[in-house]
Image (cartoon, rainbow, N blue to C red):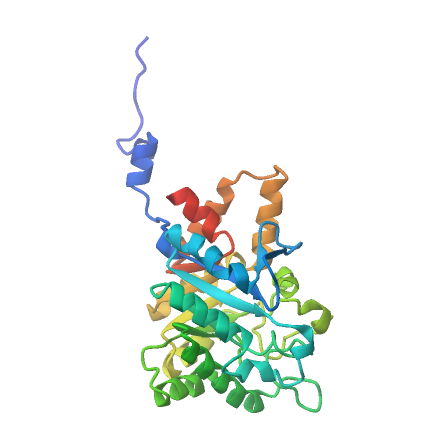
Length: 331
């Protein structure tokens, strides 16, 4: 029996006919060079140590660090972001370890750079891994972070990280004026090619919980908040203002953190400024998806789908704990 065709000439399903067409006509693509793998490096640890709130992610000891980084490099990933987990007894009120040229994370960075000179190393500038109160800066008499008192310390921290071989300095502290003071310090110390990745739109989010466990700061931070320096979660115009200031002060790349709950912010920033824009799929996002996949509630395909959403929104690269897993799939 012949079917009478009365459908309009435009049939959108034609371009979805098979996988080859769907892949060929994809408007957004994900590659291994889009992925940045965050890693946690723990002082005086031998081997690996499980992070219970982040299934599949471990803290790494210096004894295996280069071997583990080598596995990441072999997958075709071009960049890692390093986060230190220092000994508790070294944490103090001022985060003094952060500005020492021979501190633990500087040794780790130097070691990685020596073994993998082409690997792009990103290191945070913030004091929370080093303070005994868990805040990103120095405290005033009221217990709040003192912006201007913190800036000189962040400047020193940025310089020692650059000296260790860091390619991209990433201020995540959200202090006003920190990009300019760091850029000036890098220029004055002849690190003119060291990039600044500004955590420009870093929201005071509840999605960071597992990260605090990963860097072992949860016990120090308690139930405090970072609301006076990280951004209110309801605001997007404020995020655009923050980005504009950071670009003006010398940022090469800007970042939105967290990721998926803020896709609208990523798109707005990319549309407005047309600058390199990164997104951070944070620990809470990772753990939710990982637990859902491991329990069978969701297909493993949701991981790639989530990363494509960042790219579609305008992100150039994504910091994600899924980087190695997805790079393996893409290869």
